[in-house]
Amino acid sequence: MTVSGLAALATAVLSVEPEPERILQIGCEQGDGVFFLAREFPHARVRGLDRSQEAIDRAVARMGLDPEGRVAFKRGGRRPLPYPDDCFDLVVQTGGLLLPVDVTRVLRADGWLIYLERPRWWWPLPPRAFRLARTLRRLGFETVKLGEVGDESFYVGRFLEG
Image (tube, rainbow, N blue to C red; front, side):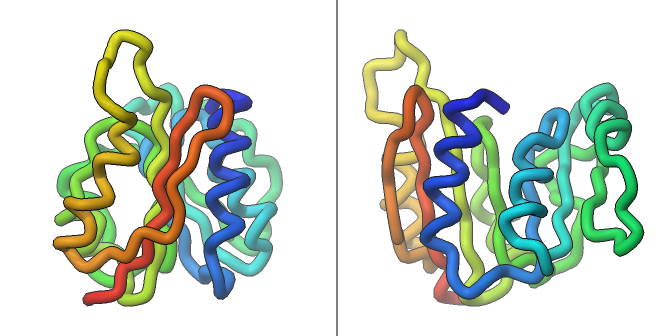
């Protein structure tokens, strides 16, 4: 995760209240966001998911001691998410195609979604994070915050229907 990505994540999580108990980061790469979320929410269990086994291996190697088992990583794709229904209070996705149906399945009612994206310089439309708001509203999300930090854009929404 880039410095701008971590700054955007840090800005986005300021909107999340109350503190989540279970967090999933989709597209966790080598775990920077997962480790940040574990520090930011010290009572939460945080899971990282990435398609790349190499990235997961690097994240696990960086983990160090975790006697409480608060942080874990898993290899897997975005569809279907390899977690049970209504499992998480906060889902963070870093770039890529957001699959709202899978996210809403694993997200608890009143849960939070943070979507981070680095816009591409050649793409003439507003960042996908900004365009998602209308689609997500139809699925029961309330847009809480949209913003940009450095070269990253972010969406923060609350899932009101479950």
